[in-house]
Length: 87
Image 1 (tube, rainbow, N blue to C red):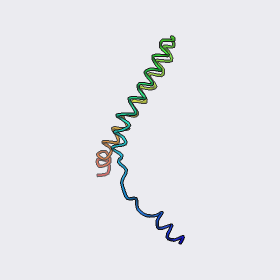
Image 2 (tube, rainbow, N blue to C red; image 1 turned 90 degrees about the vertical axis):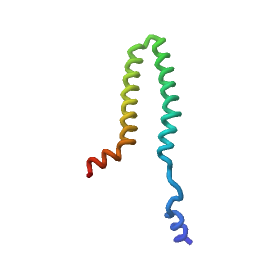
Image 3 (cartoon, rainbow, N blue to C red; image 1 turned 120 degrees about the horizontal axis):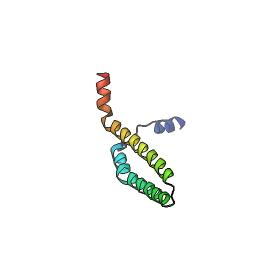
Image 4 (cartoon, rainbow, N blue to C red; image 1 turned 45 degrees about the horizontal axis):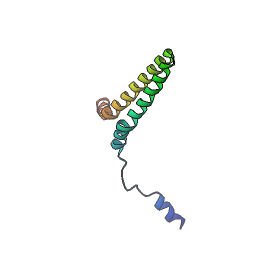
């Protein structure tokens, strides 16, 4: 009975994960909400007179967005880059 349980656990998965759908969902739904929250925080800080903190946070957010854009670019063009390197 134990060997049967191991065979069931080691079976191949039936379906595939739609990674493009997940990336599209995050890009179209989650990212704008996070950017809106950052905007509200920055506006709140700027109204209190904490301009230096707003500028620092804005610069960090812009660098973070650049990293996200770079990762998305590699996600879409990564296969072409690998083909160029290993061909």
